Image 1 (tube, helix red, strand yellow):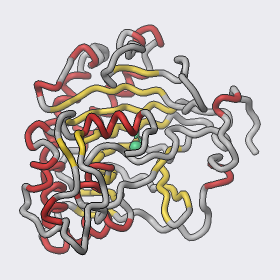
Image 2 (spheres, protein in one colour; image 1 turned 90 degrees about the vertical axis):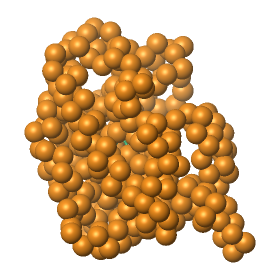
Image 3 (cartoon, helix red, strand yellow; image 1 turned 30 degrees about the vertical axis):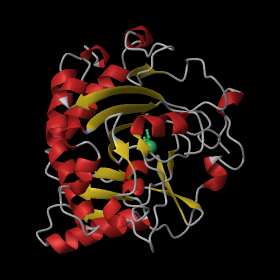
Image 4 (tube, protein in one colour; image 1 turned 180 degrees about the vertical axis):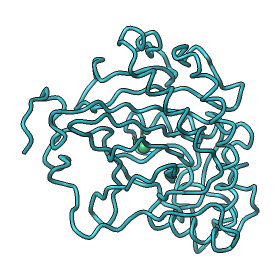
Length: 322
Ligand code: OGA
Ligand code: NI
């Protein structure tokens, strides 16, 4: 075991400790899908299979230029390397209802174990949802780099929603409309996982499924994302310039369970800083989401409740059954 000391509130139970619960041996990989494949039917089939079996896949040749991605990573890293006081300028106020802003593991936790990660949340699309107060002013290129990424990401998101709709036997625009159409919210989170003296005992983000419809994530090169399948935790291998796609709760609900929200978590590293940039594609808060009526009949009854997205979020955050 690695030597080192961390405060007890970071030490996970034996059921959670990565050193005990990570699977070694033959490791099946989440599928990698080439989004530029001209065989449209094959592409749809691969996306549908991955979303039904894993709830997660990586996409390559997605069309977002690599410098757009590296710029996004560069400005995010520069922000997190600023002195703590500079970052605290964007801190979430404890009484704020908004999720936007900076949060640190140094801050007081309400209950339970702490996660070895700092983060920054802010919306990046659509324009009416953007509040630049939460966008770092340092480095000065932060804004342009994030706006550029948001612009490119929409093409990828539309393509994914289109394929996933076809896979349900529905028109290409159905899913996107069901999550708010042009009001679909792009919420960026930056995760910053500093080196941890006891990566065998602590966790980054704990096991969860995302509340979003879809999450599109860029990691840095430090290994850490794990996915749960067949009772085991598996590492998701890092592929340079790939986007990691997660099926979130809202897509599982809309598809009445055909697509599976993926259970995932992150581990931390003894020497290296890990970072990641998930964008949660979420319905607007008053959007009503439930199993699509076209998919429900007497043989296939609705397996989930229909409710406003804000009510879903409230229950999930407060651990109230949906
Ligand atoms: C998250 C998350 C994974 C990662 O922030 O919801 O799952 O790779 N992050 O950092
Ligand atoms: Ni997540």
